[in-house]
Image (cartoon, rainbow, N blue to C red; front, side, top):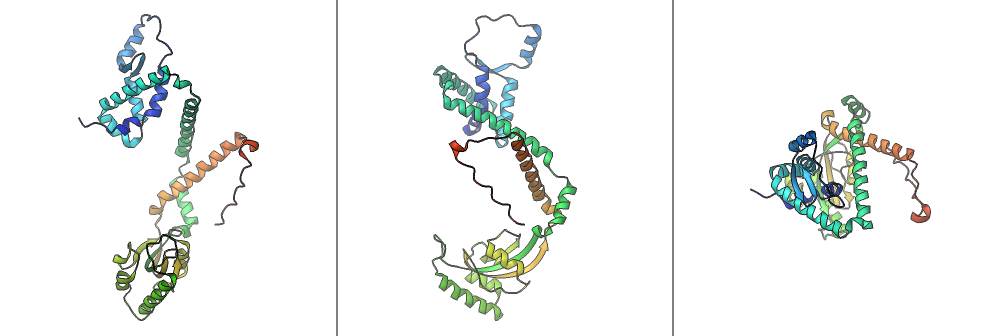
Length: 310
């Protein structure tokens, strides 16, 4: 059988440790009274599948631990339960050894367990908030209609002449040399030169030069500010003057402007509105909790920056 990656089993460490600590008694019981018939039947339906000393894991607990693993690991763990069980057995032995050495009473360990528990509980609340915060299609469409400018698409092509203005740039051309070269390319274009051919021979953008300088559809804010500003105002089909960014000088042509269809934008709108709602709910919960942080110990809180103007 193909062995499960050890990392997948070890990913359960925080979950398993907490469960095992809860199951491991301080000392074994002195007597073992007879179990009622109902308890015996329950044990038969949910048998002990791993035991180390006085600690036990039942089938239902083992299955719950697999479900608590990261989703990307669960299928492999289901297919290799024996390998997971072997790892858990070793882990259980290590837990007992840690307890024997008194490591479970260490202040750092107790703090880690407290934070792990609290983080899991906080995440559970956030998951509940997210599940109830998803907007309806109508709400997403209303946002789309009110913010059409955010979903503009500009089909763009460019030629880049790089320079060494930014430290570590792969291009060692000086800014003056780059400007001289880009002016020559601009003159050729305005004299009727073929944009795609010049991009293939002269552009320093490896991602677009072999495509004749084509960048495809660009959304607002997707490119560096100087480039973004230029494509907002450049008339369709017109060759731009050289535009300087941290990458060098660009000659830009806007080929078309359009708006992203709602169905294409709906997913990102839903994510954005969900995040806004959840963030607002978290802020309300925090405000109602009356959080107090010691200024004398941590220093004064930094002022909250004003909201950005849309």
